[in-house]
Image 1 (cartoon, one colour):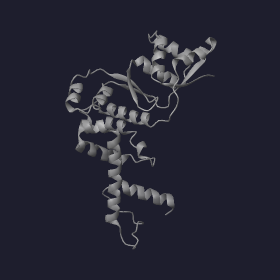
Image 2: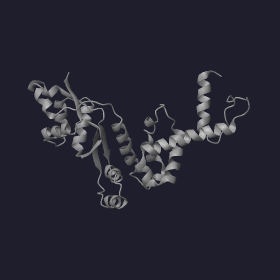
Image 3: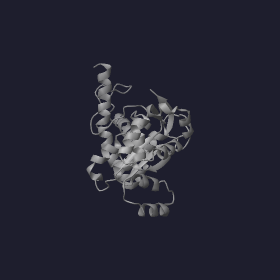
Image 4: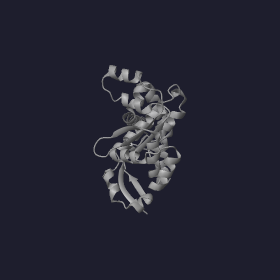
Length: 258
């Protein structure tokens, strides 16, 4: 057995919680290592479960610890880490929740998970400067239509048919009674949001869908002229105000024409 096959067999054995230790694994004395391997395998699963719990505390709070552990174990069985950094583990958890039938009574749960993953990505994104809106004054008028925006690396765009961001936000309240009141008074409308970390802390902004759409256009490389056409066709005429808000969030890192 070559080294890649050995690695693959070892990883597969770690995934099979009821299986035997690989035959090629031996103790220092040369004997079987079933019990020791099971301890190691259990530690791996516990570590991954705890990583999910750390990344998705609001999801855990919504479903309870026991349900979350069971859901996490099903996810772990079919989704192994692809990075040695546990902070990167669990990016597909929201998509998994959306198809996890036992969670079907909480249709907003997957979107709450998307909010939590977006927050994690935003918090750990690269540092970069944020430009003030006055930066636009340095662009010649005849180049404005060709102007393109590089968004701050931390920008995350969210859209949900549920008040997922407000559900997440209510769970940031430490006082249980205040949290209960916040949840009890939530609107049931869908939400759009932008997350950005221009300095030290993640800022979460509930925004009009047009703001999210404009930022998505910029992220996809649309010029200011093209974005203005799309926004106008959608019935939005206050491009200046929208740009001012985007800059005030710290969502723009660089400007360029090409």
